[in-house]
Length: 325
Ligand code: ATP
Ligand code: MG
Image 1 (cartoon, helix red, strand yellow):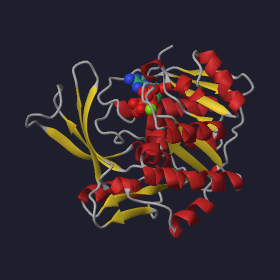
Image 2: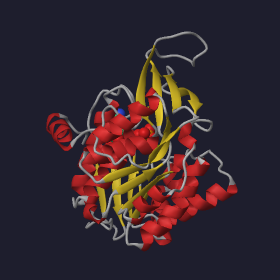
Image 3: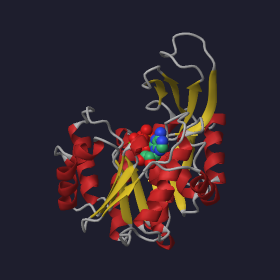
Image 4: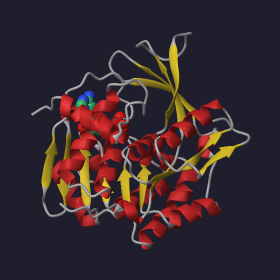
């Protein structure tokens, strides 16, 4: 169960993609067609949540993306800085506002969104000398599937994968793409290439089968190892998570018992914690415990990254919270 991931000292974990603020409706119901109470701005964006959790756990980490020259941008940069993330490759766009997502939960648990991403600063960054210098010393690249729909992120990821891998760094991929969602052919190809190059794959539910391109959990796991993936952790929400190793190892991680307040960001915190613990040298089982705690703790607090925990906070959570058997 030794990690195949490049150790923390080899260079920072780098995440590329959308940086947003999230504004959350405090009442349950349908959409935003009437004036209503809202709370926010909360720092957000799946890649940003992931890297926030890496930083809070003491992993060396850096973020590539962009915000506007506005308070929503400052909310994000200040948060990531406080979490210990290197923010020097977050650019500040002079002309476009910081990206945003308004979210309201419906009675059945589904969500309505109003997004401003494609036409915001979140989609306006690219390869630069600063980005190249960071990538040339990066130890690990984490790719969020959601970032692949942002052309600027796609371009940076394409270049970064080859450079990081060539210097002996490693790659993790969170598909973060719903099964039904049909991607453009070029994006689909890029996604398949990333999956095959992944040292660590972090799918959630049916994303496993989508990434493998075959039906059934056992078949999907087998296929992914054939493709070259080194390690897989399957996220199952409140039902926990499972680690699969190439050598046939399997470790179950029962979920912690919590009252869910806001499910957004659980998968990102889980992934950031798992990756960081592995890069810091923990065996899979121990890393899974921290990851499960990070995911569970995050759903108990409103706001997508408000519940990301430090090592001390997660230790306290683990010792005071019951786990399902
Ligand atoms: P996201 O909605 O952020 O994309 P995801 O689908 O990628 O999330 P989940 O499986 O929902 O990922 O959550 C990741 C992990 O967090 C789970 O495997 C579990 O350990 C923990 N977790 C999530 N929700 C709960 C919950 N309600 N109770 C306890 N643990 C939870
Ligand atoms: Mg997910």
